[in-house]
Length: 306
Image 1 (cartoon, rainbow, N blue to C red):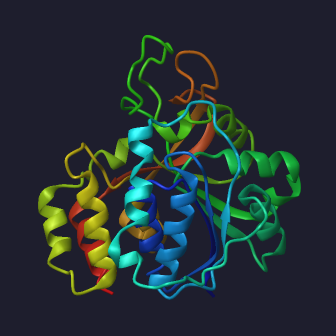
Image 2: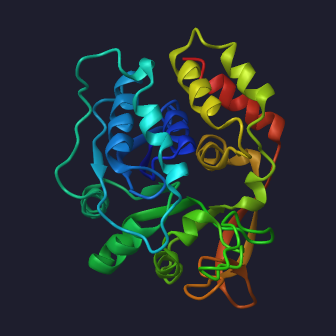
């Protein structure tokens, strides 16, 4: 039986790539894709998502646009990549696309999708946890319909990727997906959902290098490799990592990862807001601890040969 998965992404380059990887997994059945207006501009991010589903012949999967808002906005320089991807020629070869865009907000679709599912659903969230926090508050019964949460977010024993800022007082300990809405992350930590966390601790080991992008480029005869190479080419001049793609690859081959159970807490306010901290007697989570990075790069290259 296929594993039901509900995807919630926030429209950055690696989010689109994570969706593309998930759609290659034959043992997974996506029940929908929610786009959150965090690391993107929402209209092009929704549009690009629908075009990707069309390209991969998955137009039966519904897309929902979330209307939630966070506390700390992503920089506009990060968010504008969504415009570039939406205008890639490979995604604009058709006059129309058929992947449905739901009229209900993504956060409400999450509730409906979980309630109506025939079995428990895995949540793959590669952005902030705001939709899930909303759903838990509005419909507490959905907690029992969640098999597990796989979340790309947090920084446990390494520095965060939110820069120190004297104006806001941010101390640099937080990762962006947690920092966008730390109150939402703290709310999810109050639940009993099994959390498998893909933090910066492990993603720091899988940089997107020019050599890797060139390997993808050699597979340009495949549409998905062509699109993936163009996406990564947008960010190759930055310190960029395969954050969301690594989190998604866990769904493909969990046996390739070593997990470590940790006790943690979320700092919801103050200069460390969004920090995911290891503490005694904290909330137990499973952190992705180790993965063979050579296996990882080879795996996604092979999956994108289509």
